[in-house]
Length: 146
Image 1: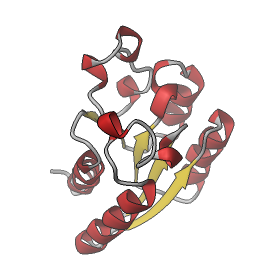
Image 2 (image 1 turned 180 degrees about the vertical axis):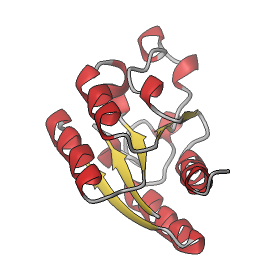
Image 3 (image 1 turned 90 degrees about the vertical axis):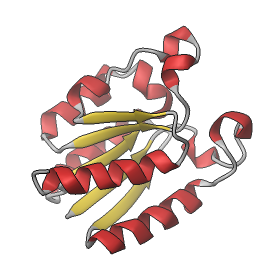
Image 4 (image 1 turned 30 degrees about the horizontal axis):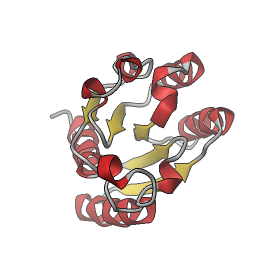
């Protein structure tokens, strides 16, 4: 199974940005752990992070062209603002799990709504960076029809 882990704005600042909310693990730490977990599952995983909406849209389209079978997507703040990213996810038909490190449903009201979640097979929020591993496992099982 080929999976793309896609991260949106400010996630390149993990480990430095508001560690009381997002923890101390860096994006490199998250990617290394996911790479290990993917290997254990016999999956291949690639990573992409951008602070730019258009770059994320382009990468989603490329994922479809490459035959990716799943996307783990932390859209960051674009979760709450981007119809364009929602449409990109919907347009490719790749099973996608939305991930958030913090629990967006217990934070500021503007964070409670996700434009992305309705076009995903699931959403994981509030479990820290462990949510990425859970998303990987969910996609792996989904791909097997479980």
